Structure formats: structure tokens, C-alpha cells
Image: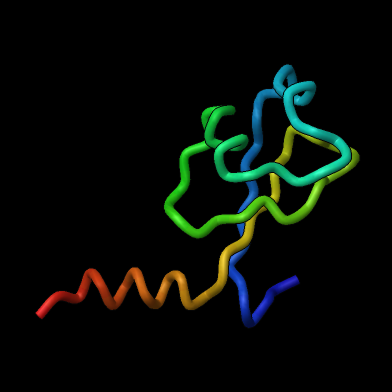
Length: 75
């Protein structure tokens, strides 16, 4: 499903790391970064993929990209 408000992405961790992913709540940025996930600012862990808990689902507002692009345009 495509959203007009958010970009989304997923990160596939090695299956052996599934035990490190909480099953009953979403992770904070500090938690997923501690697992070694590296992404730009603005991504939020927004959904648990119960069949495969080693797959982390992230999203961020579209305007995050626009702000970043505008900052890179320079004078």
C-alpha cells in the first residue's frame, strides 16, 4: 500500500536476531540503532511483522525528504 503521507521501508535482520526484537511493542530509535540498523534521521519503527519478527517495518513523513532535499540545495 502506497501512502501519500509517508515513505516506508523495511530492514531484514539475520533470523538469529529475531530473539532481540520485542514482540509486544515497537522499538525506539535507540533500540533499533543498538541492533546495528543504520538509517537517516526521521525513520520510526511503526509495525510488527508477526510472521517474521526479524523484518522491521519503518516509515517517515514525506516532508522529511522534502526538508532534507531543500537543505541540500544550498544558496
